[in-house]
Image (cartoon, rainbow, N blue to C red; front, side):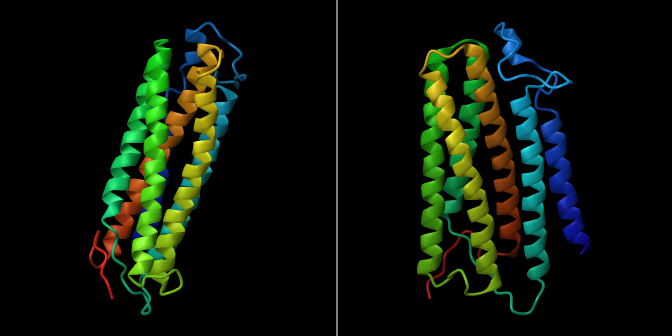
Length: 230
């Protein structure tokens, strides 16, 4: 139980600290002469970004609770270790690349480099779909090796945690598509900068969560990043 509480504290604490340092006091929309992109709150933060930060805080707690649940469940006698597919190395790298691409797109947007913004957004979209495809392949590999969803609690938690993360990625894809539509329209650079900022923040958070999940799952995997055939 102490380990579980410590894990939750680290995840929630790190997420809170990281989110609090995401340029909360900056006003990128003012850098382009726009003061009413989507409204601001009392501390000068765009309402859209404040809402996203609140959502990510709740999502972080949700992931921490599910992760603590599998830590506690793994201590029971019927728990059987499940190996992690090697494709997870690739998908992790793709998510890192997507996060980097969005951060670079944000930097380009702040500099008014529209062409670069489009290129980096396109790259982020492609590698994100690659991540989802890789996750689907990981599921197929495990199921093909006999690790079905209801085979044992370890299997169920793997599909639950990775599936929940995948759903958040899919939700982010919708926001990314809207951002790409803004980039290819005649919208103001201030509006585009804000939307890219939101996407970058969201992907950075999901990257942090994914790395935490991989580390946690590897800690109880019998043969991490190997799929055994039965």
